[in-house]
Structure formats: structure tokens, C-alpha cells
Length: 196
Image 1: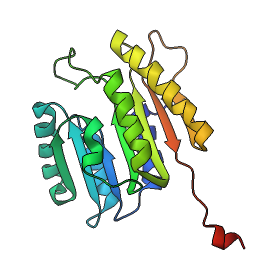
Image 2 (image 1 turned 60 degrees about the horizontal axis):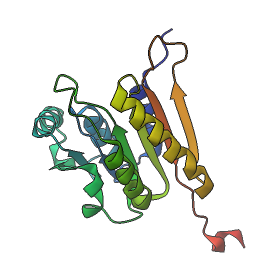
Image 3 (image 1 turned 120 degrees about the vertical axis):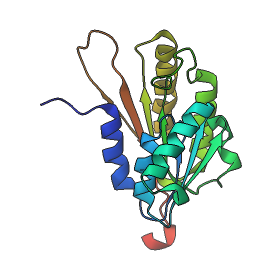
Image 4 (image 1 turned 180 degrees about the horizontal axis):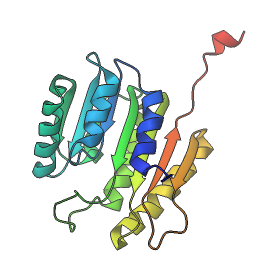
């Protein structure tokens, strides 16, 4: 048996967390695989907001979404994920997915940037509704990715102080640092009236 890839684990976790009609965000649209997955999860009543700084990525993702017949559920933005709060209200988002690094098949010199990624994580914390899920696939196998992965892991680990549940899924004993998944669920706010 081959252990599942981090993206497969992310999909498995998010499939349980997303309901039909939800609003979700693909923070790094890339080639659109996560975008299609999210669009399938939210159903015809739901909405996916997808971001990428590269025109090439948005074009590829839009074509993949269109081929799947899911275009009405997705809105694309050629802009950084740090601007996601321009398109969603605080506490309104069920899930946010990040797949960091560079666009497969494109210029490997164009990668997500640690400062922007951390700012986008802060925005995510404000946008997620109680019980919302954040998933981040990190790629520490290249220098910039290693710095980013370490910073993101520190940031997400610190959320436990806010009551978030946090996990890391990673391969062990690999020749070079393997991609890994960080996943977190925000604190669920209990309605005090139900406790009486």
C-alpha cells in the first residue's frame, strides 16, 4: 500500500467538512484540481472563490472547471490570496485550501511568498466560520518552500491557543523533505442558550 498524497488527505478531510450550499475559497487555484473538487462539494447552490496571481493558472483552472460543467459555481480572480477579504464576509467561509509552491509545468521561479502567505492565513482566520476548515499543502523540498513551510507550520500551530484543532500529515524517512499537509478546524462557538 502506498500512503495517500497530502492533497488526497486534504480532499478526504474537506469532503466531510463542506456542505451543499457552502462558500469556500481556493487560495491558490493553480491548474484547477482543487477548484473542481471544491465546486463538486458545494453543489449548485454553493460558491467557490478562486485566486491565483498568474493568468496562466487562472486560464488552466477555468478550462478544467468548464470541462467539468461547474463554471456557474466558481468565480476566479487574478490576484493574490491576501485580497480574499474583498470577496467574502468575516465568518462566512466553510473551508479554505492552500496548495503552496509553484505552478506545475510553469516557471519554478514564481512561487508563493511567505509574507503574503502568512497575511492570507490571517485573512483566512477572520473569514472562516466557527468549525470551518483550513488546509495547507506545503512543499519544503526547495529552499523558498522550506522557509515558507516552516513559517506556516509555526503560524498554524500557534492557533491552538485560540482553540483550533490542528494536525500535520507527512511522510517519514524520505530522501528529501516531502510535501506535507497542515489542517486545522476553527473553534466551534457554542450557543450558550442551548447549555441551559
